[in-house]
Image 1 (tube, rainbow, N blue to C red):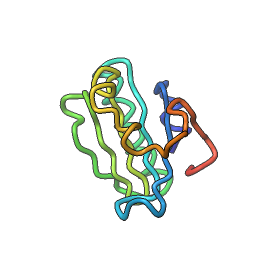
Image 2 (cartoon, rainbow, N blue to C red):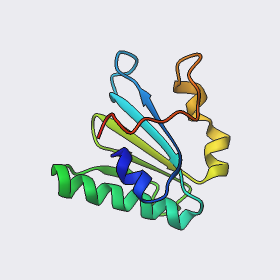
Image 3 (cartoon, rainbow, N blue to C red):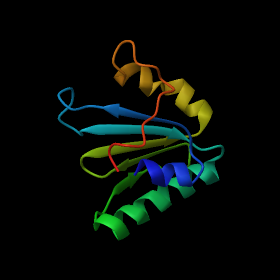
Image 4 (tube, rainbow, N blue to C red):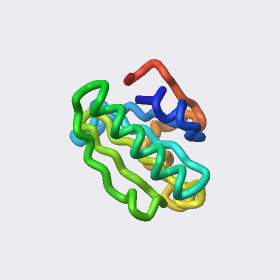
Length: 111
């Protein structure tokens, strides 16, 4: 999953481990696209890859405006933002454990 958004040139990719902190999902991925068009394209390609690779139908919200798209795959929730919208909501500050660097990214989990 992280490889997909990285391949589509998403920026500032952050993975947050939610295990033991939320019943909603195990991981959250937050990334940015440079424009509404790129945000929508990243989101659409990710949903398509999830279906083709894993047979998963991802739920998607917000693609019409392209400011903030939420993709829910069950165990992983992906947020794709335009940079200024991401800065406004600051989800990383809400979910990152104290001391974890917001710019850190890991391509090893989940795949």
